[in-house]
Structures are given as C-alpha cells and as structure tokens.
Image (cartoon, rainbow, N blue to C red; front, side, top):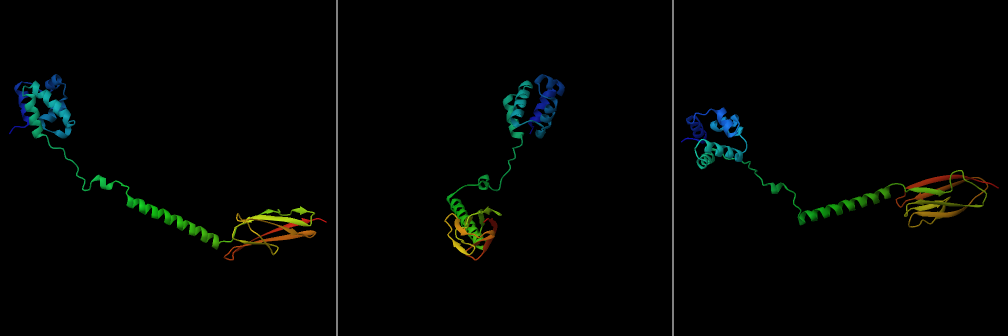
Length: 207
C-alpha cells in the first residue's frame, strides 16, 4: 500500500522535477517538501497547513486533490490528546451551601475567640490609667485641686484613698483638698481581678 509521501514523490519523479524546481513552482519550502515525502510530520506546520500543501502538490503533480487529501488523512498520525485522570471541573473551587455554612461557623468562632481573648487580656492585665489633671509639678494657690483622668470603666479608682466614681466611658474627676508646700497625689485604679495601676503627681501649693 503506497503512502501519500510515496505517491507524491513518484509523481514528481515521473514529471522529471527535482525538489528545488517543485519548491519554486509551488512556493512550498524545500524542507517542507522533503518532510512530506518522508512523512516526517513533526517537522511540518499544523495539520490544516499540511492539507493545503498536499492539495497544491496533488493538483500540480496531477495526482488529484481529493485523492491526495484522502491519503494524507489515512497516513497522518492521529493527534495525541493528553488524558486528565480527573476532570478539571473537580479541581475548580465550587461554592456551595455547605461551604457557606462552614465559613459562617469559622467566622463566628474567630469572632468569639477574639472577644474572649480581649476580655481575658483586660481581666488579666493591670488597668489603663491616664491622668489628665494635674500635670507633674503643677503650681497652685488654691485650697482644692481637680484630679481627672481615664481608666477602664469597670475599675475602681481612689485618689489619696478617697473613692471616685468612674463613668461608663472610663472618665473620672474629683476635687481634692490640698495643703501648702509640696503635695503628693496618689491615684490608684484597681481592676476586678485585683490588678492595679498607680500614678503619682507631686504639685506645689503656694500660701
């Protein structure tokens, strides 16, 4: 059984043409003509281009376009398709109600865990205590002075052992009687867990 390469080669020889002459006439590169006659398909362009070459050669060499293409289809090796053992669709992420439910559970868990960690940190650590008045080395001539600041809303505050009411926003303020000379003010904030933070201010009271 003669192959497409043999048929075209024999037809060329019968016409007394060499490859160079055939290439010049058909405008097909000599290297492509050699590959077609030797059926080196891997050295040729894509199949549709090869079909065009074979049609041109079949017509010019009087083999017949139809017969030449039929022989090519018979002799041209089938395209090897890579077989994926698992369909690509299985590798794609598909959102479904189950994933939504699990994601929701995860979000709630993270939120609750974060809240509990925040509360534990507030419980275990000493409370924040920031004094806004008076400043260190403040000088006054009055008999009383305003002591104010911010701490944790749940903490108990005492100024020189006098209890002070703490607002829901953590702010507190009180009036304290002072004596002439250097006067030390001790502000103490105690959390529910017993942790405390102490800030001292030394002021000067003039006569």
